[in-house]
Length: 493
Image (cartoon, rainbow, N blue to C red):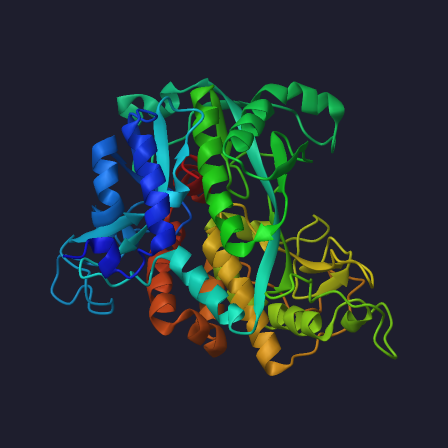
């Protein structure tokens, strides 16, 4: 009789080998408990904590998870009427009545958590109980996009720059006292770890050394390719920069990094937040700058790189330093920038970031090494590190959806042979096509983009829109928008 993992079609010899090694570690007493972790629609981790014997069994049989976790908005309110007849009629068969899905762990992902004693973690993905994959799983969405790219003999390579904020907890009772409970609750009372407005200040870096040391040690213990930790411009704002790797690995690493940093810092009396704009005066917005290039799957060569400028081109032309493929990819990112915003900027909080002269984009433009433009082309002819930096995203974005939006937009540019306009030297030109200014406008943009809807799948876009519209409607109805974002995002993300 075949076990559940075999029935799902994912249990090959490589997985069997990884499972034997994971079972050995679990039986030898390295772990007292194992968290089976899944990334939800909003990029947040959910976990079931199992004892070692139960974790061993879960590697073949999976472990049950309530299906409503797939249907939650950002405040954990179920966006579908699962207990009413027809309430899940727009969803695939397998949802309804708060039934179970199965979480199936990847044994190769077993790691020891450096901040939690004798605790391991395995990454999981959800399946229906009959062995069908849950198509709304966002990791699976990215896997599908990368499969489409692989069919062209290409893979996506990504380098990540994540800005975020760290605060010292002064009084946790503001969050943890029973009378303070809410849905969602408020954050604790905080103070800054550095006063800001002194970019790359060595003095401020030394002031923030203790929490940054926690971040560094956790990242290194988890084998995350952290290159640097820097003091950013805003008060209590920092930035983490990672070495480039393949897209799926980069997304997995981002999910793990954000979750690990928040947990490890909280244990040491700090509050880390990956929302774009913390609910205080005089803050600076945080962005997620995504560096990307395409790689030939056979040779490993960067196919964006060009040996010499195209005939007749000038530095204002994309083909001056980008290959034909690179220009098509750039043009696809531009063509679908507005409709990809909902994947890259998924909260109501982040749209205020798009304002002039703030090192954030405002319009659908590209520039050559221009940090005010949406897309920044980096690298001269012959540079194997030639790449495109997308400056659209916020650090709270679901990494799988952010990267999938790049793949689907870029592939549309490749298939259509799209050409990029000339580079901008005025990224805040008021006459240029604007990015969405709200989550509601971003939802309208994706619903109007037939090509991107088809690429992601109509069912997935409809599902995403319903969940995010529930969040958008609650924000619109909130009498105090700042308090909404303080509770909904800052206390939890």
